[in-house]
Length: 199
Image (cartoon, rainbow, N blue to C red; front, side, top):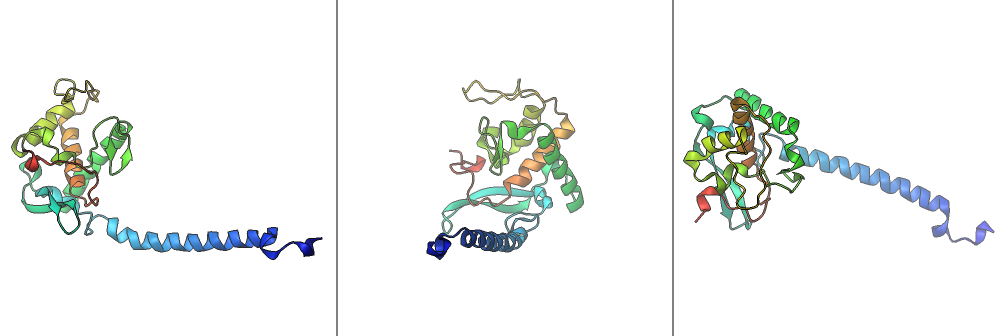
């Protein structure tokens, strides 16, 4: 009876096909991973080195790519202090660990990961809500240390809970946010307006 079954509908054919397709896609995944890693590693074209927090970071529309892209400018050290690459990495990493430890992604989105209850933090450093570049650092510290008293809910009624962040922790978080804003995310998040572009 099995001789009457077409070859393409036999169980053994589909088992072998599944094995070959799975093996092929696994190889494709490895190739894509090896091709992508150098492009998304710190210090690459799209992900600047941690010491970029010593620079002015802007967000400019690129006509050729039809999206806004980060532009690294002149020296503009965070909190007025130039840091070595090692010092900058330590500060940014500390800020990243604080955001993870305080579960910021439970409400916010960072680089496409997290929730959408609160504002996306991917370009938070450039957010016009901080009023001006001159006042941004101080406003961010005050907000992070006491979001209830320094809330910027813009009529939504939503405020961030007080996470009892110290001043040093706030500075580390701000360093992480500034570094993250320098990453070329191919225009993500869309419809974002930066401080300098606020009319």
